[in-house]
Length: 170
Image (cartoon, rainbow, N blue to C red):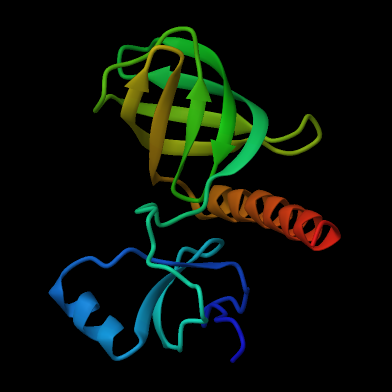
């Protein structure tokens, strides 16, 4: 049986989701699983037989975090501006390496600079979900369609690169 593809954009870069609630656990018994597209963020269900050795989903994240090293500018509620480095990213959020952390629940604006020749990606509204001594976990809440498309292209290039590396070493 072929791997599931997103019905919205057709990409094979989808991720099985952790069961949320009784309905999903019931559907799983009938081999109907929920997936999230890693590019267009669509959520969908697919009937499939799990392959031998496939285990239950342990990671509750809906998006796969991809390692990167991007520059980012953060603007907090109190007009504090900070330069940071993004260490991993997905369509749903990122991790910032920082010298100054903000409290959990702080709303921020974020501008990510994937490469010097690419247009920056502006996240209009994001929230600090985790705060550690040298890093913060950020959840993206709101961004313009153009910025979401640019982020999707960056994620696609990272996933394709990662997929190519896996094929080289398998």
